[in-house]
Image (tube, rainbow, N blue to C red; front, side):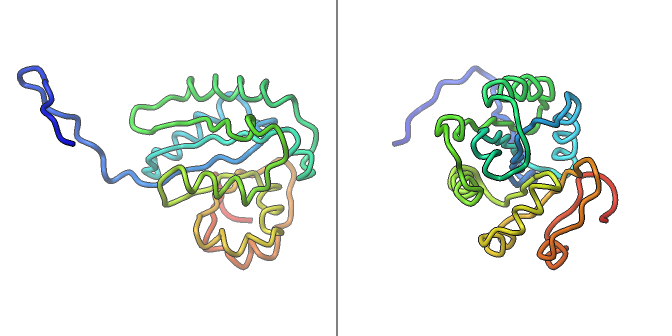
Length: 182
């Protein structure tokens, strides 16, 4: 239904920036992140002309099942992440902290989380993960299906790791957040 809308004299609607496209999904436990990392990632997303950044913190049960190490409670990491996101707020990029996994309060497979995000946010998708998580993701059976739908952005983790053979195979579908490829 269309209706009349009252606006002040001289009002001009904001022009939307249609050149910005894509959703950057940051899938991490945020345990090893520091205060400046969120701002750095947002700056990178703006430079790449992304429209939205979706921060997806993992529940401790998911982290335990993935085997990436012990983490602080979900709510503490979430509070810290929300403070970083507010600090890194930028004018032309929308940021959302997705709390779905915290509401579930249990293990959520990566495939299920990606399907949830793909149903909720607009494409194209860029998935930012740590090097360790990227290697785990490449070992999952759903990797071949998802690597066609998304581009990986790998945040190098401390310590050098060898890349999973499937990551080497799909080298054209990912990039490092900083620096050249290993």
